[in-house]
Image (cartoon, rainbow over all chains, first blue to last red; front, side):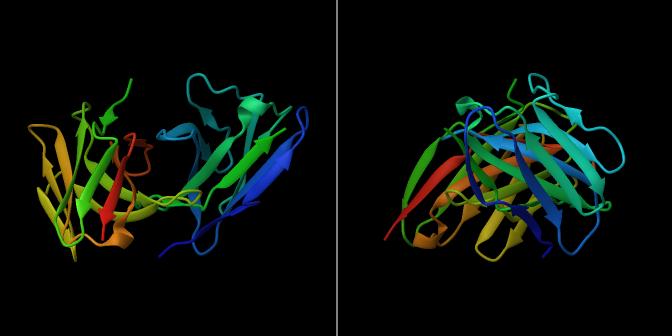
Length: 115
Length: 112
């Protein structure tokens, strides 16, 4: 099946710093990628939809200036958490859709801990 | 507003028995549904899907049933195995390339 990778898998940073998370589709081109966040014992919550070559579409309540998304190519989207705070600590997961497929392929996730 | 709901946060089943996980949705425009399986600290893994033109889809031990009039779908796992223990999410989408809405998940424990 299609493979989506995320890097890093785990990151610890200090409060006030910025962290970049990469999401790559390894064997297909993805015009659309999604970024999700999961809080403990809760569902995946969509943060934003990332379209190659255009600005990301953010869900209500998600600060676009804090969570910067760049979909620079058909195989790479990045999420940058700026000026991170402890409440940003969470599990971030990206997904990608190949072409006209319905199926969404998920990355393995990135565990962010802000101290 | 939760458009996809999984009202049972957890389920325990004996090995060899059937596991039934339920999912309800509110948006009648949803036409494609997925079930994902997730282990802790890992990304979700696609399990099985069904489109609105069908009412049943089977893949090995996994069967998904869709009742459009009731806006309800269920995942049946038979026979259940200890390795099936994980959190199961259902998800729904309106059309190709559109976002998926996820339920809150059901944690399945299969007891050996």
